Structures are given as C-alpha cells and as structure tokens.
Image 1 (cartoon, one colour):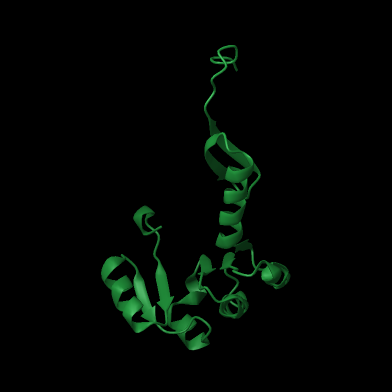
Image 2 (cartoon, rainbow, N blue to C red; image 1 turned 60 degrees about the vertical axis):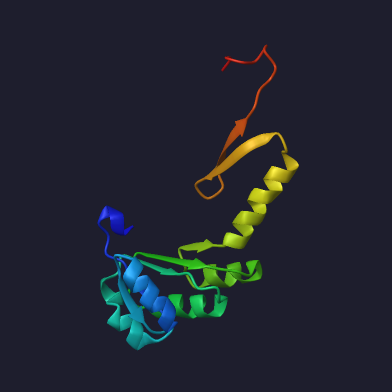
Length: 144
C-alpha cells in the first residue's frame, strides 16, 4: 500500500513491535491501543479513507470499527478469528469482514477434495477460482 503512494498509519500496543515496525515500514507507527479514541484521533482517523482492524482479538477489532464509524470512513475492514462473530461484525456496518482462518481452511479443503490440482487461486470474494491442473489426455491437450 505504501509502495503505491498511500499514507499508512499503524497502531500497535506492543512497544517492541512498534519499534520493529517503525524501523521496517515506510509508515507512521503509533504505539497505543486502537480501541482508545485518543489514539485514533492521534492517527488522524478523521482523514482516513480506509480503516483496517486486524488484531487477533475479535472484540478489539469490533470495538475499534464501531468507534471509527462516527468518522464516516468510506471503507472499514475487520479481521474476524471466530466465524461465529461474522454476523455481529456485519450488523454494525463493517464493509468487509475477513477471516484468514476460514480462508485457509477453505483452501486446504479444496486441495484435499481435488488432489489433482497443482495450484489454486481464489479470486474476488470467492466468486471464482483459477486452477492449475496437469492434463495427460492427448485428446484434450491444446483444446479450448
């Protein structure tokens, strides 16, 4: 994101991770809690085009997203670890809810149920897939 000219602000409450992130990333790093309105204001949340809550804690992600909704940010994205919480996130108006655990599980399921697939790429929100399959039947090689 930074590489394409976007300004990125990272809020992290772990001091060691803040130091590492500040030295490794081309982004403003704020040591604080993303569920604290003072920290969000320090991050200039009112000027944000996108807000992403990506901690491993569903409750913290949900609360921070609820807090930033008052600022009319055009796009709010949240990570959810527990799939049972997905509906709660959507009910409060979070634009995109992402579950890395469910995404990985779905990918693994497809690799298990389709063992001949060499590679699988899911496109969009799971609406399409690109499959890499070895074809050995000469009758179909080169055909559309």
